[in-house]
Image (cartoon, rainbow, N blue to C red; front, top):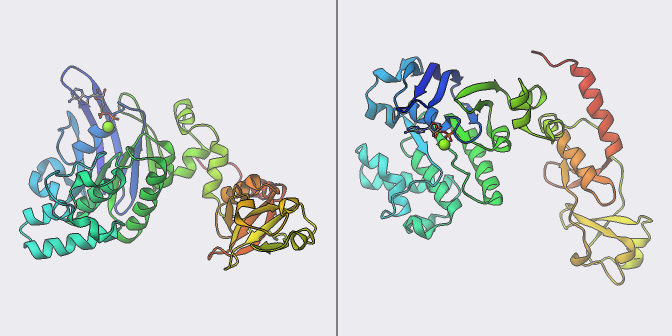
Length: 368
Ligand code: ADP
Ligand code: MG
């Protein structure tokens, strides 16, 4: 556990970057620090590995005051990932990842073979290991940055906006890989972002900070959305928070509607014989691939005729995914699939909404 106990940082010139912060980041969990630019997030992280010295207060890791530890030893126990990866430009990917173990005296062969393992674990092709950082995309560089931080197998990771500089599609992949990796590794992580959606997706708990380094609320993502502590937090967690909170509610067991389905290659007559204006098309493994308007199939059903706008909810997914499937479906019938992606049946928004209301009645008033 990382514990901030009444920590304040006042820079020369008088800026108070962190103001009387008390916060615990539990072992094996992801604690996200989120807030607008300049609210002291980077300062908080860098005080943990002593790149910045607090003006007052103490930071301890597993009960040991970091100020009393040997700095080199402290930093070895902490992996640090920053926005632009901060890779050594004149070292290959594998040598970047092997840097810290080599410094710790691990022999070259062992360090490199471990580095290759890590390169694969963070989702990079082994063939990239010989490249130099400039020969990688931004997303690939960030993965190398994560692999390098993990190389000495530190119990603690500090991550300062590691996914902020890449495009939204790559960012989502990096987030998903990161969650998968953390499920295996169980590191104690302080993760900084200015993006509330990222905070809510990644955090086991989320600390919302306001400018001046003041902790506005520390809570689980679900509670943050359901019960913001004040107007600042409410504004910061943003609009659509009622809808977004549904992501933390498991889908109820609804009786799904049966749906006539078709396949690619079906004739117009076959499709129209199903008697629906919108017909769901399934792929070879029974997975939904899109809706087709029956009257549009003049000869046979080919992929260009499919509408792919509807999302697919998993029966064991969230209420949000279920409602979104219904709302996004051109037929109004939301598509539900099993764990393996095979089509199960459909659901209407008018069936999901009562389930949402029933859930609220069950829970009653949110606990303080
Ligand atoms: P964030 O990471 O949330 O954007 P920072 O921790 O970088 O915030 O900065 C918090 C505040 O401290 C800002 O007002 C910033 O200008 C100020 N600050 C950061 N570093 C220094 C420094 N070395 N000297 C003086 N002020 C600083
Ligand atoms: Mg910062």
